[in-house]
Image 1 (cartoon, rainbow, N blue to C red):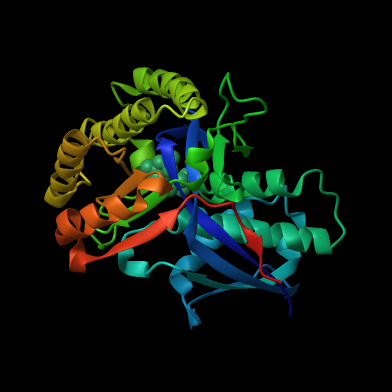
Image 2 (image 1 turned 180 degrees about the vertical axis):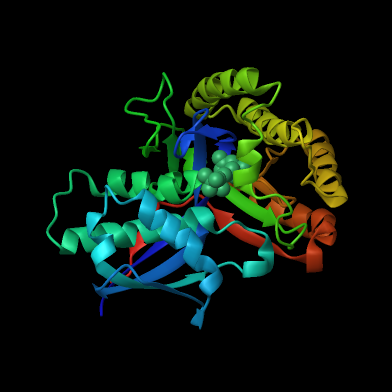
Length: 337
Ligand code: DP6
């Protein structure tokens, strides 16, 4: 078999994608920090065949992942028409523990999409823009995966103030003050269990959500405000918008039908403590949440020492097994061959 391999990072949304229509078209634009340490490495082996797929996670055959990969191959047929005449082995591993509650869909789907692009290139097929096509393909596997293809930030979904922004692929975004290009993200692992409600199901609940249209309009506005704040190194506004986005995401979950709550008591405890610490010390430390209980603590690199001390003395005790992951803004995927 021939092979190709890519390592692709996870990302954390600042403006949240929540709601989609048609085939993976976002209901609103989103912007994310591309991460550095949290990543998926995927080696794709391929040969002439009939579309058979095998998946190996950390060296162990994992048939449970096959349907997701097959759906990805179906949805990306226009981009990768050769996939039906090939057999594939996907060998994948995550830098973060499987049980950490960190979603691997963005990093996993972007790594796979990049591998498929390398196969396409190897076959000598026409490619206009390698990363743009990779982002488009990653989106078809997992919406947020479209943003993992670029660092230090990426924007997905049409937005009036981001030139070239598109619903089908993310665009790299670096029009921010330098302070954001080395921002830290310490991920507090509050609950390591499997998610009780999948993202796909959650997105679906936005279809008949009573607040959907105002939420989608708000995301556009928040994105505009965030872009200005990031350009101006206005940390206070940055924090206000990012925290509001996180709580709005969870507010949408709590007000959908059926309703659900993904935060845990310790999620709220940590948020309260971040607020108290910030008020008492004036240090620029903020939080965001993804579709789960874990808390992403965001702060400038220049404050690393003091914030890590705060995390170790005050927040760590609220984490499952006292565990957290240290990450920071990163530059995007790297080829492994
Ligand atoms: C809350 O990208 O996981 O993390 O497109 O169904 O795979 P699918 O959903 P997914 O949703 C991510 C939702 C989020 C917000 C975000 O990353 O923008």
